[in-house]
Image (spheres, rainbow, N blue to C red):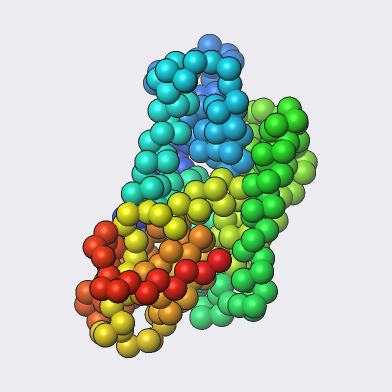
Length: 284
């Protein structure tokens, strides 16, 4: 485990955030019995959860409160920082911070041990390219339910809420628990199935990949087309086909930049520099 963490700082960050979220959830229960831990709150993570991230943004915009006050609020600051980070670096919240993404990535490690090279290749590429748009249906649904004051439905089907409910003793929706169990089960075969096909907040942040300042670039002159970067990508992006990765599924996890992945140094970089006559292979 020590060796794994040494070579995977992202995993260390994910585990840390996940533990903080679990402690925050436990603290939510402790507050109800007047035994809370100071300075620990789950509300911050509520604003960036897979569905509440979308509802929070909608409610922030729709709120009649003066914009000056909204921007100064905790919600306004979190939304502002999240969007600025995503505009600069892409969806790093998805790749490094999202606790539900961490749960899927940790489950994926088990799946990789079981299925080896077959892992994350059970769904044919043609089908995967079609399924990746389903999360935009989830985004539209989340917006509609929020606009019609039906947020309770979203909370009932939110697997992240079901996970938190294990620790904070809130009533847990059976539908949410079923979806949570299903996502974890599928994660044994496909990495990040929720992120790829259902996450509304990830769908929203993924749009910023088209405009982000820093992105993964591939030097085609030195590339061996070994496709090892493709294999490492949790979202199944064909990095070897692009000079600059602006795929809407990219979560800016930077796994493809691991020095143990690409056999040619400086072939894959995360940079803001322009590519000469940049021919970006943009995948929708």
